[in-house]
Amino acid sequence: MMTTDGRPESLEWCNFAAQTRAVCRFGGLIKNPGEIDLLGFSRLLAVNTDGSNPKLLGQPATAYELTIRNVDAAVIDWLTQSDGTVLLERLYVPEEGKWGRTSSGRSGGSVSIASM
Image (cartoon, rainbow, N blue to C red):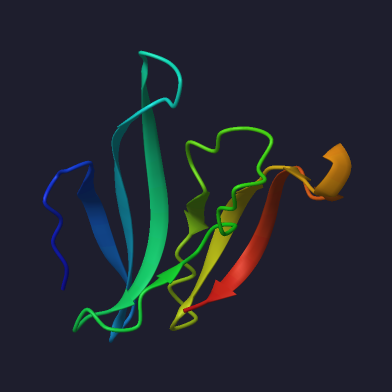
């Protein structure tokens, strides 16, 4: 279905959300810009079982984020009675727009049903 080279990310797990669609978590360690520390990160991804049509399930990253997002989303329930949907917790971080104003009002977590 998919592989990673471990530089910097590695595949942590995959689970079926439908017969032809899976949800996978990948993560790794990256250097914190301007620091000597390493930061852990993980991302949730939906992908067809043949490796096609990948889709990140968390908030898309931008250069305007005010904080570092280590984890973007987590599966709360696989909703096994409904093929192709999962219940997700998503993490949202505020973004800074032009002239230092906060451009994205979303901040914190939310729970939503995601269709794969």
